[in-house]
Image (cartoon, rainbow, N blue to C red; front, side, top):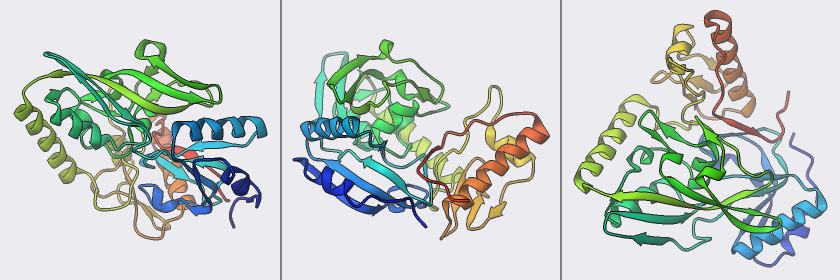
Length: 310
C-alpha cells in the first residue's frame, strides 16, 4: 500500500521547462537508512528559473512540497510522499571562491555534498569547517538542521543563505536566520539554494590532521557500514542520548529489520529489508523508555516525511 498518487501531477509538472520529473520514484535509495515509499512526483530542476517556476506551480495549485537533500536524517513513510518532492542537483549553481590574504568566502549550491565544502576549502587554502568533514548529506540539509558535532555547528561558518520562494531568490544573512542547536528557522515554503561560508587562511596540514582523526574516530565508533540516519536524537543538555539509550538496555534491540546499533546506541541501522514502520517503532520505543526510566524527553534529529502506515 502506498500514498494515493495522482496520475496528472507528474504530467503537469513535466510541462514546466527545465524540470526532470519521475512519477512514482522510489525514495528508499535516496535516503541513507534505505527505507520508505515512492514520491508522487520527484522533480530535479535543471536551472534556478525552473525551480522558481516549480515553486509558483506548487503555490498556485496548493500542491504539497517536500525538499529532499541527501536523505541523511530523513525517514520517509512506507506510504510514500504525496505532491512534489524536489531534489536539487549539486551543480544547479556554479561554485564561487573569493579568497583574500587572511580569509575567504566560498559559495556552493545547496545540493552539493557537505564533503565538497571541505574539499574546496582545502583547495583554496582555507580552514575552519573541519568539524563538518564526516557529516553525510548536502549543504542545504546541513543548514536546515544546523548540523554539527561536539566540535562545532554549521552556522559557525555560515555567512549567508540564499532561499528560493515562489516570489524569487533572495539572500539572508546569518543574523536574519534564527538558529540554535540542531535547529534553523527558514522562511515558510522556502528552499535553500546556495550557502556562503566565511573561512580563514590557516595551517592546511593541521586542518587535514583534524579531519583525518575525526573520520578515523567515526569509523571506530559508528556503524558506517550499515544503512543508518546518523544520530537519531539530539543530545540533551549535560548528557548524551546514546548513554541514556544504553542505560535502559536498548542497545542492540531489534524491531522487524531495524536495530539499535551495537556500536552506538544513538544510531538505528537497517539490517536489510527494514520498513519505515520498523524504524519508527524502534525510535518511539527508545524515546518512551528513556522518558519512563530516566525522566528525559529525547528530541529526534530525524525528520519524518510522507505517509506512515499503521
